[in-house]
Length: 154
Image (cartoon, rainbow, N blue to C red; front, side, top):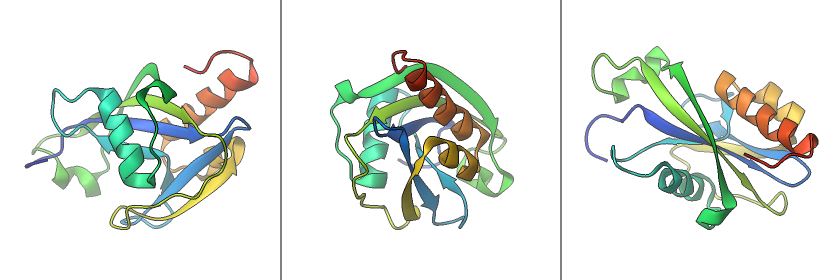
C-alpha cells in the first residue's frame, strides 16, 4: 500500500464450534485486545480478499474463501485521534465490514510482531469483556447469539 490508509476495513471474528474466540493484543497499544482487523489495500480490493489476507498476516491461519462468512454488517466508527495520521488529512471515520471464520479448535497462531504481541482463546463472554472496541464486542456477540440460537452463522 502506498500513501495514506484507506478508511475501509474488515473485522474477522475467529471462533471454534464451542465459541472460543481468538483475540490478539495490539503492539502499539498494550492492553488493547481485538479480533483480526485490517484495511483494504486498494479501493477495488474485494472485502473477502482483505479478510483472508489479514487473517493470514496477523495469525498465520490459512483458510479457503468458502470458510469465511460475510455478515453483510458494516459499522462506521470514529478513528482514534492517535491513529488518524495514517489516513488522508481530514479523515475521521472508518467503515468496518464484519466477517467470521470458524476453526476446528484453539490452535496456536503466528503473530505479526510489528502489529501484535500476544494472543489468547477465550469463551465468548470473556472475549466480549476483553475487547476495547465496541464494534468488536458487538461482532462477537452476534456470532455467539447466532450459534446459540441454532441459526446459521452470518
